[in-house]
Image (cartoon, rainbow, N blue to C red; front, side):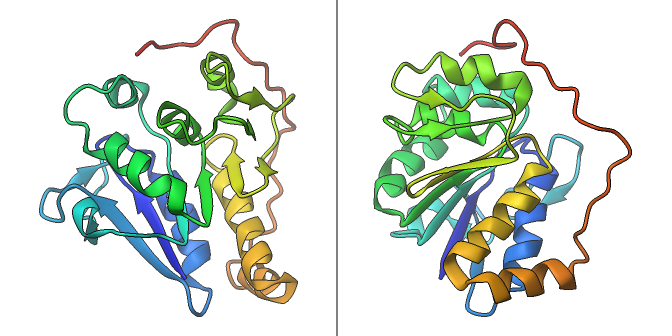
Length: 208
């Protein structure tokens, strides 16, 4: 089972490392960090640096495409089809043939720009709900779910939602026992200090 996570400059760190951690505990799962180059460091929104493990050009097929979110200033030129187009072109090429197409946070906007959410229900980070609504062919789920599944499309809410979402995918692919074991191993039983008080903004906070 090959899970590909395309990464780019100013990507959200937890969008990548949270699901990566969950997936790596599952026997038979191979997680690949994908980019145009494996030599150029990827710098996350908060300044963490790492290298991709595989190149877009060498990737022919994925079982799971998992798209993370990132800084809107980095997303805008990608979504607008400006150079470099390597990420958007990769999504358009690989997405239709992946068994599962997933995103967390603003990653849904990248899937939307690639046309991979057309005809599906989806969600995203609460602050970017209006952005997702601007795509006429996508039905945005009401409220602020941690994640939402519509057939083989799995989209997550903001940043930390990827933890719940990735566990859900493990459950779908490997069953309850496997997902429960990953949750136990990572001791993921969150008890945050505050309850949700989310409210979507009136308009999209950026343009592309």
